[in-house]
Every structure is written in structure tokens, then in C-alpha cells.
Length: 449
Ligand SMILES: Cc1ncc(COP(=O)(O)O)c(C=O)c1O
Image (cartoon, rainbow, N blue to C red):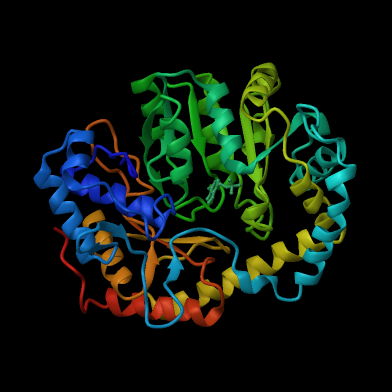
């Protein structure tokens, strides 16, 4: 089977199947040119009526996601425009234009790491290489998180750190509390390990403490995952009082917190970390994917001391020996000052892009640079905008991707995410916003089926 959809259990089945298809194509799980299973085979395999699959394939053909080749079947199309391809505002990556002027330093960082191919340790110890952990410990000290190098675990991206923290902080079958709209990778880490995601409502400052208390009372959950700074997808940042309230509730109910700080470098001043407020219960997660580049897959995890043994077991089972070559490149970039300068350039570029959005779209903007802007609106309207944008050459995040429905399928937050970092340069970005402006001014939005 070339595709096994994961349905989100939210809304009519044909919409669930369409959402899964749209998600998997946008995230690259289904590459352009992939042949989809014949409709009857897929219907039998996932236990859906043939009509449901037919309706979904037809909608996806109409939306330009698929193409039908006579006699051969149905294939993933990918979006095509008259010019150089789609404008991508569907994923969060640093704006490539921020790298101008730093490319030579980055190349040098990578070139000097090439000796590591033969001089590196082969397999490193479970904990990685001392120099790399010392760099991570120094980076964390700049954020007022004081940990010894041996308390920081290098991982393959923040994603693996989240996955392992979930594995250690909860058990299969447990409810894990998530922000009602969150990073899809967090939902995936929870669901793929047999945990049950449960949404906590958000306001303009992120997680609502009263809603968190209510969710804990209702579910008895002992694990919360939150993105306190530059939240994905809403862009909001929790203030100090909010952070203290959240930590206070977690302490009272003995809840572990997984703090995803991947956008922590974006505010002008580093906010106080949950991990600084409650080191005994917070798993701190970060990576260099947003402040340097995602290809490096340099993530890291700080774990509360009581969980260190369980984490080491996870490391052994999942990773054996942490990546070292990419950390060596990062170490060189750090020593050359590239890491710091790039972080500033990325912030400046994101702020300039947000300024352009402010001039062109009437949507709420966070107080500091963020990777993603959030436009609250009903999901059906967001889905229609995503479909129309795709047909016009602009790829947006599928409306349902970040949402965490409650057990009755209700959504506590709905909206459209705009990833402003991913267009390669300013002119591509402005063209994308232009497409969106036309759509949002109400001209032609494809009706949702
Ligand atoms: C909030 C958040 N956390 C974690 C990740 C995963 O990061 P990494 O590339 O380091 O695995 C992302 C990637 O988009 C993200 O947006």
C-alpha cells in the first residue's frame, strides 16, 4: 500500500480522508509522482465506503493535489505555477535570504568539520561528545538555565527530544495535555506512542491556567506539552505571571511539563524558562533548526534529574550514539559567531516580513518576531482559503493540521497558519501575501465540500 492515511476523527469521513491526504502531501510524506492506491483497495484497507474515497479523490483532483493519468491511475501532483514552482508558506523554516553574508562562514564551519569524518569518535558514548555538550550547556546558560554539560542530551532534532520526553514522562494509554492548537510533530509524538492527546484552551497569552486545572481534574493527566514562546501555530508568548501560574498548577498536581523552546531566541529578551522555574519537573527541548538550519538535525534535551535513568534507557533504545558530525559543524558555527549573527538576521527578516503583512492584511500580529502568524477563523473557511491558495500557487498549512480536537471532536481553537519564514526571498514572500490578500478580500474562495 503506497499510502495508509491517519484519520483525525474529526468531522465527516470524506473530510477526514481529504485532510489526511492534504497533510501528507504538504508535509512531503507523499512526494509528487507517488501513485495512490486504487480507490477500492484503499476503501477496503481502511474500512471506508468506496463513495467516501471517490469523493475525496475527486476533491483532491479538483484542488490540484492529484492528477489522473488514463490507464495508469491517480498520482500526487504537487503544486505547479507558471513560474518557478509554488510559494511555500506551509512550514516553519528560517528565511533563506537571512543567510546572505553568512554563507562563507557556514561553508567554513562545515569544511572544518570534515576532519571529524576520520578523527571523530566513531560511536560516541550514549551522552554524545563532551565538547558538544559544553557548547549546549553554554548556550543554555545564556538563557538562565544553568545545567552541567552532562545534563544535556544531544538528539536528532527537537522532534526526537519531544518523542523521548513523552516516552519518559508518560505511559502508553495515558492522556497527554496539549495546547488546543499545536505543532503537528507534538501530536504525532504523542499519538504514535499510544498516548491520548487532550486539548487545553488558549487565549492571547497561550495556555489558560483555569483550563489547564480543569483538564487535569477531568483527565488525571500527569504530562503537559507546551510551547511558551512564539507558540506554533498561534505565535503567542506566555508572560512571566502566566508561566508562574502554569508551573504552580503543575506542582500542585505533580504534572511533568515538556517545554518546547524552539522559538525562544526570537523575543528581544529571553523570557524566563519554565525549566528555570521548575527544573524538577520540566523537560526542556530546543534545537538549531530555526536559529541555524533544519538539515543539521541538531536537537537537545534537558531532563529533570529524577527521570535521567529512564531517559538514558530511551537514548540507548532509540539512538545508541547521538549525532556528532552535525554537532561539530554547529560547534564551529558557534565559535565563529555565525550562530549568534544568524539568529539576529533571522529575527530582523521575520520582523520585516511581519511589517509587510501589517500593511497588507488586517490580522493580529504578535509583539515580537515569530515564524508563524495566526488568523483566527472557522476551520471550514480556513480550508477553503488553503484550497484556493494552492490553485493559485501558494502552499499553506492544511487547516486541520495543528488542531487538537477534544474527545467529542470539538475544536477549541480554529484558524489559518501563515509561515512567513519559508518563502526564499522578500519578493517571493510579497507575492505570496499578494495572493492571500486577493483571496481574503473575498473574491474567489472555492466552496468547501
Ligand atoms: C514548535 C516546534 N517544535 C519542534 C519542531 C521540530 O524541530 P526539529 O527540526 O528540531 O526536529 C518544530 C518544527 O517545525 C516546531 O515548529
